[in-house]
Length: 213
Length: 425
Image 1 (cartoon, each protein chain N blue to C red):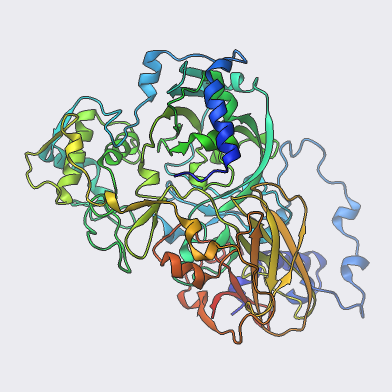
Image 2 (cartoon, rainbow over the protein chains, first blue to last red):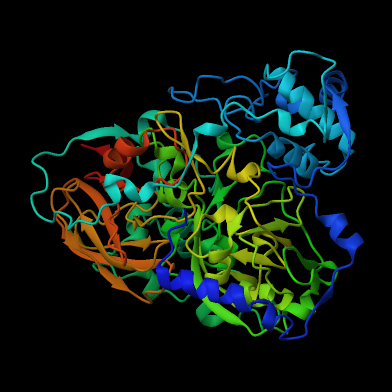
């Protein structure tokens, strides 16, 4: 998958083999305590690694959403002003106005849990209990029509039963296979017969005015 | 028409000259070459600064630019984002020269504002697939062997507003989500080896200490290759808005991965697919599929002068054209410049250091005949990749990609010297 020169790959492999042997070379820092790691290690992966015990229902999530999320994201995740849209947007990705939501775009539900837990609500991050994060994640599934029962309960145990619909539409970086990156000697003289202006920024006039003088 | 894009510098300079000299100089005349007939009052009259002493030492214990440079600053585009707490501003590329971006002008991108961190209370934790999970203080980190490297940081969304057509008038706004800085720090590899990397470790998750808790997944090959854990930029401590006291440097790769306020790095066997590498920083293609893990910033250049915010006041004659070029895949071998919209190209002169994954400065001097110009620059990197035209890039990416727009920019110079962001056939 990764496109690194072979020499780098060999050097990396060698360093991985001897990494342990030279650990502690400078004798700097100290061993982290288990409770210190636990305090900071909150990340969650698509395979469920990192999820804490807990559970919450759609109905519970709806109450928290109304209080802590709806002001920016709207009652049903439709988004207020330019704050992110959370729900809807299905079948828009190939159109002129793609709407990238949890239901239409995000590949993994674990990303929702992790992000809400680490960074939401905006201005009061890391204030939610695990049960509240499960409940909000369940509500986000609900407003994206991915569950239809307000009594649906999401928990650590059943978390992996809800894959998101767009997961298969993510592909690895294949930019180098694009024609525009093919190595060629670029044209220097008489490269085209005619040049016409086809678009102007001034038409849109969205550049901020200078605030000087 | 040209008023709105006239350089504020010239306005300020001309007003001050007018006030101080008490002579009725026209604004345009004050800024340009002075007619010699009556003698130049700026020569003939004594100036205050030529007669009276100025401030002594320590009046400015941390120096700031001249008051006449007050127009040189970062600017944002308010309609782009919902709130300045989670937003971006832009480096004034048209006001700079050389390759180093001054610290106070490096564009800002925060996801939950600037974390103001006391370094005495800052820790770097290494956990996950290591022999020994570890904690380092800033004092610990400063005792590791150090390395200096100059690297550009470009936001993957730089030029992202231009996918559907010319939109913003000024290279500050079209290309200003980039800066180029000399970092001092310790190679990430050194810190990881201090903890002992387990053979099963394939990915890293750096995490920020700010209220967004920024995270990105980075493959271990990159971490061991050229990443730096840095605490100095251009010789002084990182600025708070650039991650003080500690940030990750990921040379050549998209700026979002350069986690600021770095407090933890976890090693794991798989990527985490967190918010900033799924819902954001994935490149939506015309067919609805999306590329992920598009880390490298491709070869790119832009003419910074002349440009819409730096107009050509002198009408015609000898003209210095300059700009910057960079590639996340190596150095820049060559920059070509066209003044006729891409019909004919001339090789520009690269001046100053040519460093790996760093900005390059180029110049092209020509005798302007006063006619309309369509200025373009095209960079070619050390891997042989050529900066594409806008149409060529759109043909393979569509217009919904947001990220990784490295296409050729066109500036239309009009006869009056005003300049507009345009697209050409």
